[in-house]
Length: 414
Ligand SMILES: Cc1ncc(COP(=O)(O)O)c(C=O)c1O
Image (cartoon, rainbow, N blue to C red; front, top):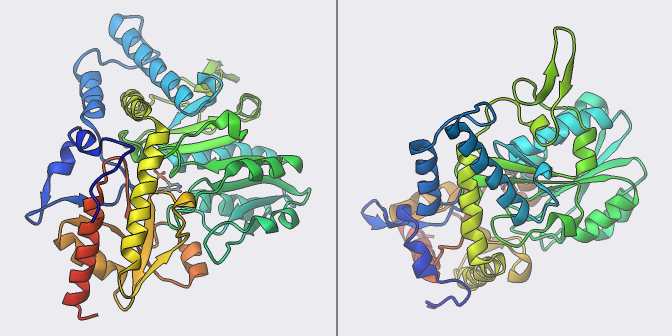
């Protein structure tokens, strides 16, 4: 058993997360499902509370104090996120509801405007449905061919196959920066360079990366980067689509209505400037302000320290799980290329049964296909169990997980 982590003061951090003090089934909560959604610190909860309790008013509409103040806070949140992901300017940061909406925005607006029959999209075998189904629907509708970067036996992308996939017909390449199932961290830079060399645009699904490691979209040179606020300490209902200026400007709006217009007459309409062109209607401005508080929190910890902490947790979890008879880790076992999600199976125990038995011990993990059914088909597994970690995860919680797995095996006599 280990009990120290050098990179973050986890005991201190945990004091900021009231939900971690809850008990379930009379036991202390061991929350190991942050890849699905993270817990929220008091700083984010009070940003939400403050925004509703004090100068609450709709943004962009009023000439009075409350509306101007809330608009300022909303603009500041966009600036914070701009800095956090290394975007060149706030105009490159579009607020959306979540990564799913960000990816749909690209598929509907960019995909339907710039892609046509005979074009090809390259994606990967490990994508979350959010970065798979929008392309599948587009492909069917327009006669576009989808091609997949296959996986190596270790669960990394087989980039040796990339050159043969990258024909001049490829107009778009997309992949998860970090897989929500395999935990695989893909270095985006070489893929982006090679995709750009054939003139393709690149969409990175950063949902499992942005909360956990430093991200610099300009250094990556991706055309789009999608993330969800609720996985990175922020509230639900707010996410971000980063896009390069020229691409966002060339794209038609996704949804239309209030705010996103510049002027409307009975027979004409012109669009507002980016990013507002893509933000029709009243935005989730309170949630955006709270996401600003979330990135303040993460930036103060330092994203290098966040990654170092999770690397240590995942390394320890791999070490401990490897000792368990019948346990199989799915995906890379090298913590240097594995994010903070550890997916596994236990011989002769269905992941749902395991999840239910672990819950009785207060240990919350996820069981199922984790919104990646094609990947599970490729793996030949109907379902898997996943324990996922974050800034507040302690090594003793990994011990609690292992102990609960042994107890489940004992209960089921496996
Ligand atoms: C890799 C990845 N992409 C996209 C998503 C979709 O995120 P959301 O449901 O917040 O839109 C998830 C959520 O689990 C994910 O893990």
